[in-house]
Length: 265
Image (cartoon, rainbow, N blue to C red; front, side, top):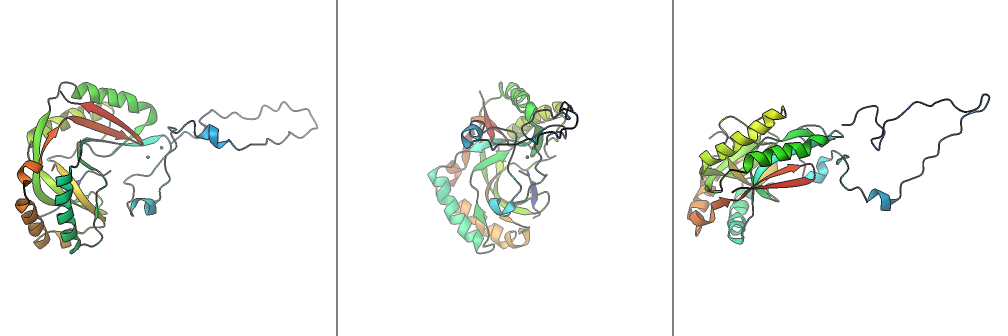
């Protein structure tokens, strides 16, 4: 079985802007003839003032050591915000119990696998938005989602995924019922993407809930025998049929460090 591509999961000011975003101007030469201009002394901004503006456009530096070795799929530039549309999944205790059985077994094949910190199903690729387009983008999404009905889906088929660059590998549960409704959601999200001239979702997508990940391409170790054993664990888990049937109540958009929720009807 070949691995399916996974949705990949930033900010740039213009060159004529200063650090704080104001327009810079050349010196006006107003000092007296024969005198040297006084040097400008810059005083540090107090922390109390800096902390007043936690939502500035300046984003984090690229440091893969702070993210488990993960590498950005596009460079971080000031003014650009990585944006992703998805369905959140709130893991219940029974789901985590299943994961506590699956992950140690998978780690016997690939010890570097780690559990996902949060769970979701992607409805878009990771795209870049300029800061001033975030709210119009979210408003357009909300308008598209407003009439969409809530629905149930089931995700119980274990599958191995990689990102497009093959720099990360994921173990996921593929959606086996509710696929048509997910396609309808993606169709609405894609229309918004097209309005903002952004990349639409993959053709023939495999909707899934990622459980664990590791750096590098680990398909060779995880597919085949390991995959069959993981599927047997899921199939034999108590109440798995009920546990892995999920009710979708909202779509969420993450842009930089901001989250926006769009409830379904």
